[in-house]
Image (tube, rainbow, N blue to C red):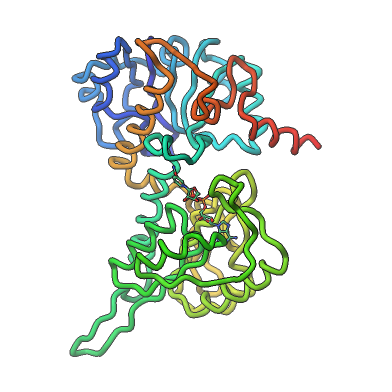
Length: 377
Ligand code: NAD
């Protein structure tokens, strides 16, 4: 069994697995082949991979010969067709609503695992790439905001005058949002938070932030902890509360997502028009449409003197630790699907079944099946 690690596209600095995990794989009779230069943007050299027992090879060799291929982002259709028929592809592909991608896997008879589709259960935590990377995104979003805001975050009393603390509004208190709260608080900002899940109120308050209450949220208890779509009445009340908090805010960090759907617009054009000149928004939901009316993914847009940065890949900007955590998630997942150096797929296991999108060309994942059906109808 050989596991291949591929170089990521030019916009990505992370790598699927760092040298530190290779030794442990070798002990289980698993060879590792690394495309030359894979770790360079995460400051890991080919030599470091070699020292741990990996072989440095060409991209083509990995595509054609490896039984397991690791790449964070999807391959092109052309490269997908080069993969060995029995190959297993592992990465973070967000396959819901991505018909073309899933179709390319089925037509090539591939087995694919997308780690973002793992159930969010306690047992899955060590493999949960969404959490490990969202944590980084929340942290970096606040640092970016602090760097670009034309004023201080902390309150200051100086001989030259007093400075009021920055007001930060965080929309969505999932993993990214909670880390954003903690980081903004450490920098001395006053933080307000809104989430449709009332259960996060306590966590938000324990981090020293104020929770904005809106009555009448839809019950999300059957959605595995994720948010669900809300009624029109709730959305109207929510808009009012968000509008009140937005006009006072210096910084807004938005993280609100609903898996498989377009992100909700929480900051409308009307709210943007009322916001303070010089205030800024970092929108982590940009890749699924964004939480503001003006977000553009991977761009900074200025509207009415408010700067709106859309970026859902902030973890890539901290590639050393992001790769370390992502690689550990991948390593833990490999332990689940390998036994005595061979592939051992147990589809009775909810983690294996949940993360598996296709197996030998057949769609396994129920949510992906449903999503394909919904798009056809
Ligand atoms: P996410 O990225 O899917 O969404 C971010 C946040 O946005 C969520 O808290 C969501 O409730 C909120 N949101 C959605 N629509 C909104 C709206 N209209 N207005 C305001 N907020 C809105 O979330 P995530 O960080 O990936 O976490 C999703 C869930 O999974 C959470 O319940 C989290 O606690 C849970 N989780 C469980 C585990 C585990 O047990 N293994 C690990 C991580 C996360």
